[in-house]
Length: 418
Image (cartoon, rainbow, N blue to C red; front, side):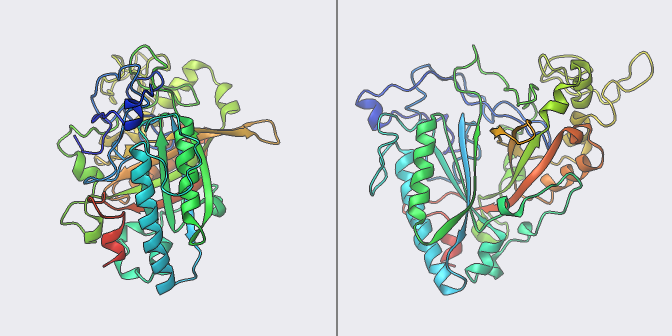
């Protein structure tokens, strides 16, 4: 188990003063509408007691940054920034100072402490609530700071996909921050503190808000459903698997060296065309996915965790799981073992002018190399996934997320001081 997972529960100083967290259970993870199906959690931890949600603390310092293997939280904010300085030494100097500020603020807030300067008091009555703050660098960051020689090959632009309808104003960015918490006020407090810390050094490029099932909303921990009503999260890789680190994190001997213990995040805003989807009957929806809607079990039988029998046919001689079913096309065994750790959030940004809901998935996937993780799976989905008719990729980003900082370090120090 990684040092920075929420299985290491500590009582915060606020909890000792009498704060009692909201009711809850272990975090649940939702899978990707535009990628392979995910598992409910990246850990096998038992349900959390009802009074500990607010007091649960995630460690900021460690081998990996928090917010990667941390069980998925109920509230999330994603925000990308562009450096204000044009380029060169000034931009790099600003980046160093900014990452120092952000790291110090994240460390304090994740411990349930107020921000150092001018805390707004928004989260005054709450504990840490499993808050995580994760930082990444986009491709353009390296040119802006004079660090092009340190830019990883894995940050090469993602290929275009036929399902893309990307808005460049809501895509990419020099810097990326992921915030998650099991309390909405705690999450907003962190978002506001990060924005204030940016000051004049960086300006917001885009920002998105997401949510998941609240801890304690079900009688026992179970795989959550996405906004299509599908049980969505069955086959996420787990830290207990022997090749987990190899698939998700950059090895210590990997290149570039500053990425050791880090990972690459693909971020996609995937709009779900819910009106079209809901016109299908339940049996039609199940054929699109390849799983039962009621419990997430494969159409070939068994329970949710039963392996798909991709060769099984029905009395008519036809495959039970259709050739173009999402579960078939995205299965690791259909993609040379390609695997991603998916930690998405659902979103709903109101009703569009045409009366349709602007809703879907903030898809976030983690891998040691996106060319071996996201890209081959998405290429295959792009060529024939039945689900593609009902989703639209509207924004995209790829970010290098370095390993976690040691005590006394700031995130990205090994890059920025190289």
